[in-house]
Amino acid sequence: QVQLRESGGGLVTVGGSLRLSCVASVPDFNRYAVAWFRQAPGKEREFVAAIRQNSHTFYADSVKGRFGIARDNAKNTAYLQMDDFVRDDTAVYYCAMSQTIILSSIRFASAYRHWGQGTQVTVSS
Image (cartoon, rainbow, N blue to C red; front, top):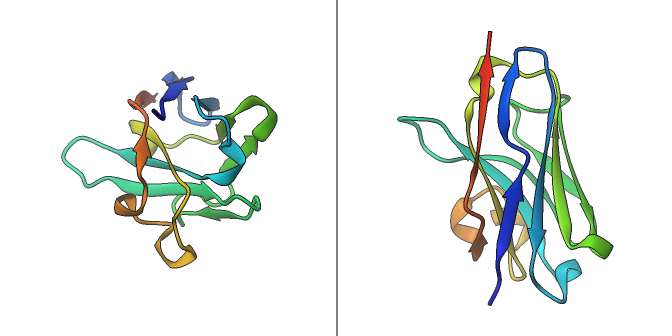
């Protein structure tokens, strides 16, 4: 079965940085598109960033220029580098991936088959 393990969350200050990691227990990680979503208390889960099998990337407007998604297929790992934190970045961050996603659905949580457990990111001032 597919398992995703997330790490790297924590407490940071406004303007600070964190890097999240998502390690997948699959033999063919390069066949999956990977995305990060986040959910703040009382709010809907929202798209953050995605990277396709061909390494094309996509970002929510709220994080463009601040966050970067990357993948290392040799390590079965996807990353979310988060810089210049603002308070609204506070949320549980989830890694998700799917082999069968189409481009038009890449920003929708329902398009992803496999999910990690989530990791808390808290931004303080």
